Length: 442
Image (cartoon, rainbow, N blue to C red; front, side, top):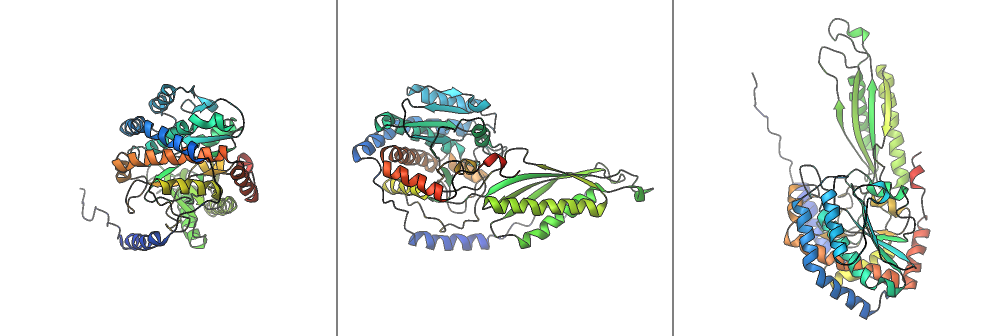
């Protein structure tokens, strides 16, 4: 007999969320957008880019709506990448699909030599949520940014690429492409992300994946439990150990996990149990420290229960936190103000309202920006049905066009203004320069 009393969960109280929204609203009202001391491209070039983006509006919105209606998960975005490629080809660009050994990666590059800046597109969706992270907006704003900048890049003495990067949602497509050499001759990268606010720079956390697999000794749980070594006990101890660790972590760190195997039947001592954790932190070094501390917990849980343990790291590439380039972000901010938006500086929207992205890996190889563009209200979170609806709404369509304009103008500023370009790379070197990403966690 099944009894269903109290089967429904208690709804979370939203008092804290509402207090955050209220406090953020006051801070937003008082904030001043980032500025820039650099001139960027000349007014005639900016006007030409703006006219080009306006002419593309119908095509960009149509592509965004098409992607929204036909979501595809990471590494399976075959229809999406073809639709993106078709748009670029209709506007006169050669497209390579399958770049870096990934079937759904794309590269298009303008002819010429000189400085090379890339605009990035993502187009993977979430299982069960469609474009609940708004990648249809990311994709088409990136396409528009490329097309707008491509029209003037060669006469500015530089090149611009559109690079379509699959499987951001956990698959690490950008890291796979980087290791295959796709970004080797790229000097800087630009992309945007839809959000609940316009923000010039918002932190994203580094992320590692850890599967703990505990190996015990099976036995009859009633007749001879003393002959068993319970792998589930080890897994529970590890889970509780990580829970206890959270009290002693920096406020930016996150550790969250699930049981993926807990044994087969209650009358058999489990000889195998497994957990999958995501570990996140705001700095590469603190992420490495978090990984070491959680590894010690797993080994301790195995030791105390007489079990063995395997630690399987990063079935997909690890994600590093984003290192922002404020010089480029300042140019983005200037152009978004001109478009009627108010991109906030860091620290206005609570910085713990964030996730992770493989753009972080590129940001430790070259200068990068990843600004946020508003498509929803302040209480609508990423990875929800409500955010998916916003990504297909008129506000999502407006973000496509405004975002394309901002990306295009920031790209042409980089190509046209040698002093700006020098400042971008001086800032990158002063922040630590390029990191050997593939070996960082070895």
